[in-house]
Amino acid sequence: MIEEIKPKKIYTTEEARDFLKISSSTMKRMLKKGIIKAYKVGGTYRIWGDEILQLVSPKLEKKVYRTYNKIREKTRRTIERW
Image (cartoon, rainbow, N blue to C red; front, side):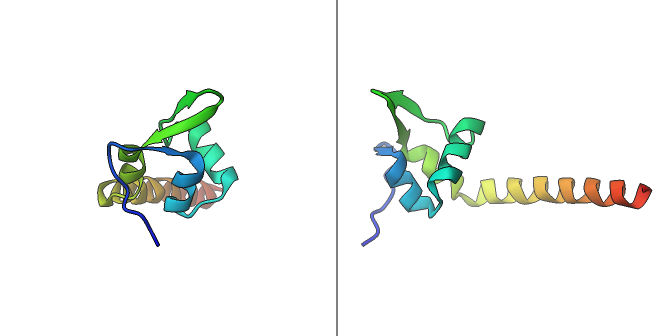
């Protein structure tokens, strides 16, 4: 049974990974790059539900798509110059 993500609840990295359906290495990479804000408590990370919800929001999806298109276009122009 999938639990609803509550914005004001604090989750572990394992719980966040389950919600996002990502691997532990992807979670580590997202934490390291600051894609997910987390707070270290006693040697483990804690993540607010708001942070998880932002990752799955349609606003973020549009922003990611625009960024992807910019990178793709820049790569295409670079290849054409060669």
